[in-house]
Image 1 (cartoon, rainbow, N blue to C red):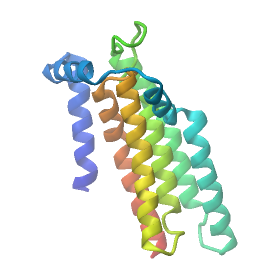
Image 2: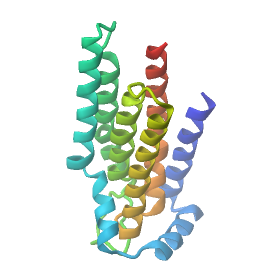
Image 3: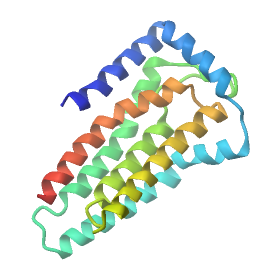
Image 4: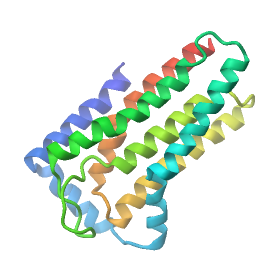
Length: 198
């Protein structure tokens, strides 16, 4: 439970700093200035967090897990796919009100606007790729294949995060906040998947 609670506390700290324009925000802005170098590669990486890219990956994983569970006659075969879909549904349900509440302006690399905190693209990538990986993880028989799946997930999420910051679409703390906000949800999904395996 401590591992699930630490990201929530960090998210609360970051949100407090955003709302009060605290010293952490000034450090965040300095870091952003050092990192922002818009180019085509960072644009492509940031696109990995688009719903049109990430959500279909999760949908395929949900369908495959549901089909295999039902074909195997597993009790409550529908539970893991429903949990994964519910976690994805939480992304707009949590991110949109937070964007409206915090009203954080964007970086100098984007047109003047507000509502950049937390990063919706990062949240979409974290949940879609993370949930897909967790749900599919029990399927490969070899440990090497499972490790490769986790590595691929990490590359997709970190690549999206890097692209969003490098392109200037988000401040670094916008991205970290989305990791913290949805990391505990993935932790709960992992516990559910492990319990079902037993």
